[in-house]
Image 1 (cartoon, rainbow, N blue to C red):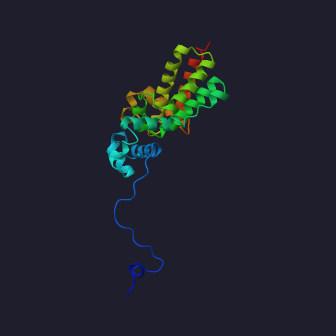
Image 2: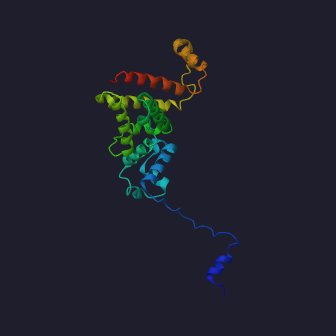
Image 3: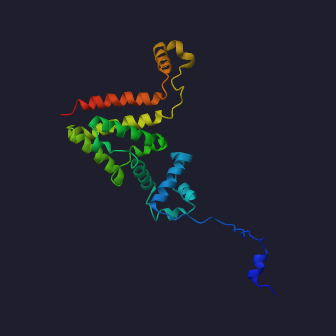
Length: 229
């Protein structure tokens, strides 16, 4: 009489693997990096409105209670996301370049990172930074660069906030539709605006959003530069 093992082997064609039993796939091994990556993926797919702890748990194929062994709340997950994204913002020029070039490089890098994650901007822009070491490291590098160039210390944070407000707004502009300023049937009643839009279009710029960001950024750099001692 054949053994159970040989009977099982005979039930599958040569070279074929036994069919996997039905059921849930194995749950991901959880840590903060895994949770952060999954949360970003969820926000990209469903927007901030679709980002809940229950949805995040489903994305990770775990019970919601398993998440709370690693993060205390949704807010803590958002802080992890903030810190993760901020780590990609390049502040190295503050150690190697002139102040104005350093601000320029930082701002362009900042906009590039957050233009890919605009659904998170309204949330991240108002998150406290106390538990975000990478975010704090970015602010420290920028603050040190401002201070070294003779910028009034009492105005450093206000300058950073002003730059961030411009950067975050410009991040949305990167993905704006090309015809966002088309006045359509109201062109005749808005002649100055319509003419300006037409002149912009005739320039044939590869990226009007980049041109607008460059213009605004240079104006901010020039204005803040005048405050240096």
